[in-house]
Length: 331
Ligand code: UT7
Image (cartoon, rainbow, N blue to C red; front, top):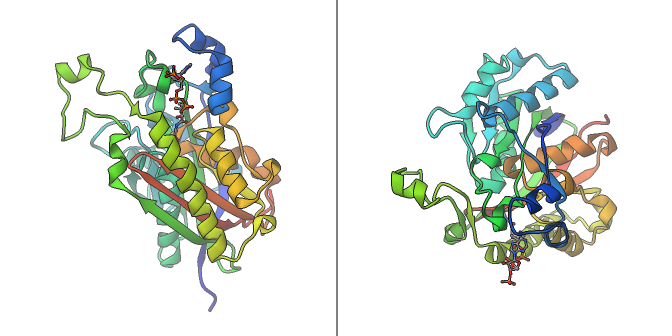
């Protein structure tokens, strides 16, 4: 009997309509389009304006797009993994609510929280369930309403992040396609550099934490940048080496969209030209858990069965890694 691998068999995505451009940001904080474009590659990002909608809304839209496009019956889904850094609520997992709302009534669900690496770790997790042979359809959703945790008076963070959601379906494959290898890492020493100080068990919400703006993302950008550049490139190189891949063998780099300069560094190290690198940071900014599936969403039509894809991410924690997938279908 051939080995079961976990293949992505469908993709869905969603971004809200409202566009927050660099020009609008220029009216909000002391910044300018030239600086943002040169330092990050971002031109605009999408924002979920509705006050009564949380991350679950983005996730539901993305999942429903996938279900519709792939003609999948939600009742057949065994597991919904919700990758997010901005759950609807601290308690009552967002994925559970999303699963019910999309009609995945026979599934169980949980949230997976690993900052910007949530989706990457989710891919690894989804694959293990499929490879066990016990689960046939695992829906992995990555969504974040980053605008809910960003201080729009802080020019060092508000220019970076955006809202969005993406989803992929993992199913068993016996042709040797799907997730073939991975190299995942983490380092808790990094938590001082990218975090939200308050609202957790260490520093529960209080009037002081609100006054001190401790519920917003804090990032020491320079330090995170330094670690991201070297570590994301390192894990990509490692996965390529382990699988005897050289630049020519890789069809696509699917990188976390945090900063175009970080992506360029990884692509250079891998020996990949620009046209093999998925890029949509200019349109969406950094959507945290949604960057990888939104890349697939934008590039799905260009992917061919058998293509070699390297996924890579780096994020708060620190968390990072790379995953090697052989694409399983033609659109
Ligand atoms: O996805 C999770 C992982 N996160 C990342 O990977 C993000 C990693 N970090 C970065 O992408 C970059 O560090 C940033 C985009 C956040 C910042 O870019 P940078 O090139 O590292 O800039 P910097 O922090 O070194 O700041 C350079 C200058 C400073 O001014 P001085 O001290 O040189 O006078 C900043 O005050 O740019 C200033 N600056 C700005 N100027 C205009 C900082 N933010 C802005 C801004 N507009 N928005």
